[in-house]
Image 1 (cartoon, rainbow over the protein chains, first blue to last red):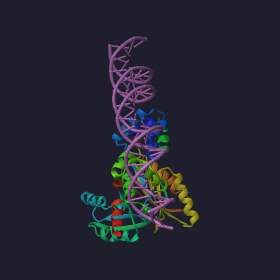
Image 2: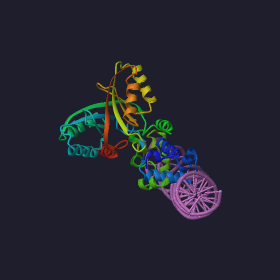
Image 3: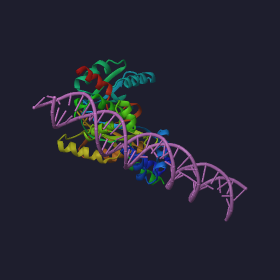
Image 4: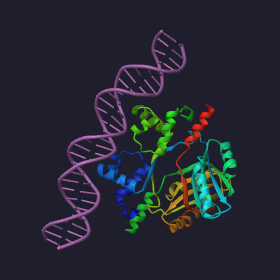
Length: 166
Length: 166
DNA sequence: TATCTGCGCGCAATATTATTTCGCAACTGC
DNA sequence: GCAGTTGCGAAATAATATTGCGCGCAGATA
């Protein structure tokens, strides 16, 4: 299933659930303008098609004691496929690393990390990340504040684009 | 309300909802080991206290036609508070910019952006971001692939940490 | 045009869940 | 030991999720 197979109702469903993933199906149906049963069927279809990957609560990291958020730019010595995969696998096993994106350009990976405090992060950095084989360079930047943090994609842009094509 | 006021049941609730934000309250209650009514009350309290900021469906950006994901490192000429705020406000108004984090170090901001294709992003880059007053430098990196993308915080680390303190 | 067929809707019925109400037990500070 | 407080859970009720089914519409076929 691809975007072109999605009708405007499907897209509205995705948009609404991206904004409020815990909305009741009744409310969702009301918003997209159909009755509850077909709405629920559509949601299930979207889930099974992988267009909805899951649902997550936004937890307040700071209040939970994760005071520090860091972006780490990582360069490797070897970019052989096996080495890239090996590094990714390590990232998946580090709980402080929440995201790992492979990039083009000089930097090979960017990691989004959280930690309870600066020293916890330093321990991770010096004890884990920097001692990992094949890691050539790591540049870290502390997050001072988060100005915008929107999930997923801008449906406005999608609709505008589709209306131009149609 | 701070983390120290959260008991193990609250933390389990947060952990479960971070993993599956659409779980029914009955299922959630079963998992955390209490009955449904107090479980729902706890969830409401956590929401009102801001420990849960919201719930979002993960939508598949690529399937929806957003093929391109980019990190942009932005440096400003002036780091005066008013200039920083002005830039942040612009970011909030750009739909392709999904996240904007202010950083320490040379780079002032890191932006996570999405776009339907490379030329859309180039248009945004040259037509918007680079022409914004006070923007001194922008370095962009295309995301080749996403190796890890976990929401929020690692509750394992939190529990381990609390058990050591207690 | 008439008919067939597949698809998706919505109504209605049922199963499940959410929410309120209330009484009880465990803790706290006198 | 005695109020006051807090949070649990049972029970009742309201709301929601889910299933089953018949209908109408759009496209295919003759």
